[in-house]
Image (cartoon, rainbow, N blue to C red; front, side, top):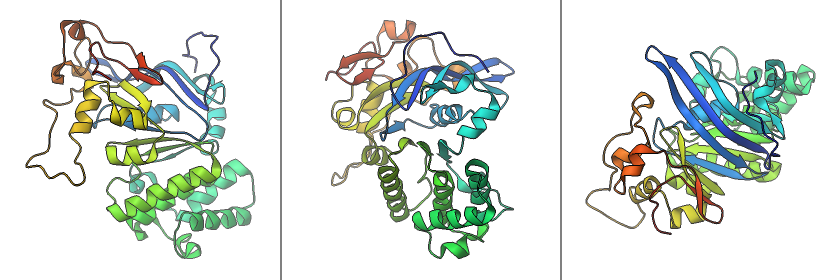
Amino acid sequence: MSIGTSTVKTPTGVLEVRNLETRFHSKLGPVRVVNNISYTIHQAETLGIVGESGCGKSVTSLSLMRLIDPPGEISRGQIFFEGKDLLELPESQMEGIRGRDMAMIFQEPMTALNPVLTIGQQIDEQIIRHKKVRRAEAKERAIEVLNRVGIPSPEQRYLSYPHQLSGGMRQRAMIAMALSCHPKFLIADEPTTALDVTIQAQILELIQSIQSQMKMSVQFISHDLGVISSVSDRVMVMYGGQVCEIATTQKLFRHPRHPYTEALIQARPQLGHRVARLRTIDGVVPSPQELPPGCPFQNRCSRVKQECREFNPPLTTPAENHLVACHNPVAG
């Protein structure tokens, strides 16, 4: 696969995405679901990605892992991991990186885990493939990692099938599988969705603890601003397949510059503040086939101007370490 653009710029992070575009072919023509996005993740850093459903968060992550299947394709861009452009590698080399150096916790473990194989068999398979060890050693490592992620009686759970575990235990098993080969970069795609708040807090604490121990870089995806604010060093806000804003977590929540980011934060319930009705963002997220020319947020934005309807704003830097794509940003 060779779709990268020529450049002499040296990658600056563990992972650097440049001008990534992912599209899906339909009867009406190609539809861009990820549209020209660029960002960097540094060593041991957690980048939170937030946005409403359909904004391109999960497709971005699947693109990084090169798991986009037809009718989808990565049509443009570069994805540098430790200096190598993953989009230039043959699939045989990518298979060696995927699961070993880069791993992903999928959104729904019941669909990601194989229902006809035990948890142990699935972890063993990954360890044997990437670490080239005997099955007895793979089993020992699998039980060790199951114990590490807080699964009780790991020897017994090693023999369990996915349907025999609770939702929280299945998610821990997914995390164990992702961490079994000590990856350098982890993608966590909505890892606490559908879990109750107690289990959610345990899973978040687990991911952060293991990240600290292993010095992993993490891309953490969620639609929950509370979760994002608690786990992220920096936050990237997406809308309509594009990047709206990137800033440190503290700066973004205290001084959002994009109207969409500001609206998301204002719509979030706040502890200790009782209101008759929560604020909402007027309108609905347009489908990728129906994105207007210009800024994708224009039809829901209270600050829209004529130039917003004609020209898609580039990412600019209104303040240090703060990027925003807006013709009329919120005052800092």
